[in-house]
Length: 111
Image (cartoon, rainbow, N blue to C red; front, side, top):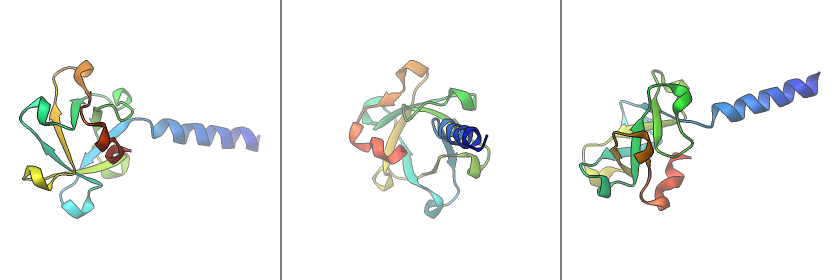
């Protein structure tokens, strides 16, 4: 019985970590990643599609769900004022199938 409970706990922990749930913090020092929204898709490291529901969030593929509370998020982001302050530049896309990485060298920032 204990073995099944342990397996169940491990599986539920794995499932809860699979999506890209983000929270926008108020202060730079609270963030895991500093981000900047660019004006054009080709300037972005990542193209982001904002999903409506938590279960639609992707696995580091640009499908983000913005959580209501900080403790629900896997990554805390801070929107910087200037592009050169950002760790990650992204562009919001209109369709889910447009989401994804332009520059794979920055993919580690969202793991």
